[in-house]
Figure (tube, rainbow, N blue to C red):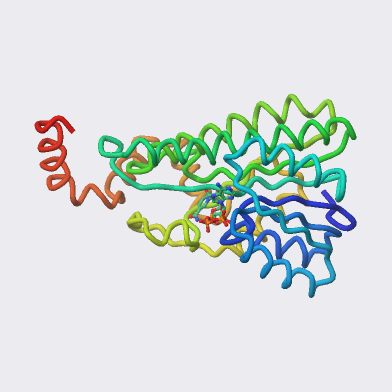
Length: 274
Ligand SMILES: NC(=O)c1ccc[n+]([C@@H]2O[C@H](COP(=O)([O-])OP(=O)(O)OC[C@H]3O[C@@H](n4cnc5c(N)ncnc54)[C@H](OP(=O)(O)O)[C@@H]3O)[C@@H](O)[C@H]2O)c1
């Protein structure tokens, strides 16, 4: 995909990977950026940085779990600033807990944003792209969408689902000249992972490197974009020797070191009917 003269909409653009993607697309000479997240102030600050690069920028403060508001805002954004040639679905949330102790509201939050939020905006944009017979959609999954991680069951489930969604859409929308790609970052140094207990031996990458990998993947029209050598190694190992990867994952999982403490608490909870 050529970026010059194009319009892109990026969700999750206020921070982390989405923010770096917005800045990298601006450096690559995209014409216009629509940047979406809930935090209006952070979007305005990013818009000021992008403006300096000579790119038109439209901040859209939106909660992607609110489908009615998203519907109205996207229809208006397309009318005022469309057509949109590139949609990057980057907004996401991750919670870490043993599944047996995961609070239901946190599970629901992950599914509501990572899956339903992505579906809502993709449906609105993809229909319009299909009508104009042109477009590219990037869904941000994760290495955890290929290799599920203990303590991240719901997050992994949403990221596996994003890969299935991407694969299905890729075939469905090809007839409309709409390309659909998945971006699979591995551990990246952003707010999302700051409060998580880290997996052993995993070296975090930077959001800037993820953005560069995306741009390279877009130029090649790659169907899946893996980021960094650790991801390639992990996916390769998963194919050749899944038992080995399972073993390494169990060793690397942070909460296993607290297993006995956790099990005692869980037994107490169950005994007291919680
Ligand atoms: N960091 C990693 O290690 C890693 C690895 C693999 C994949 N990923 C994926 O990469 C994507 C970006 O992650 P990140 O690390 O950059 O996370 P982050 O720094 O926590 O940023 C998350 C972004 O999503 C937005 N967001 C959250 N809830 C939203 C909502 N309800 N409506 C609209 N926007 C919302 C946030 O903005 P507001 O708070 O302003 O709404 C923010 O811009 C996610 O899909 C994540 O799963 C991350």
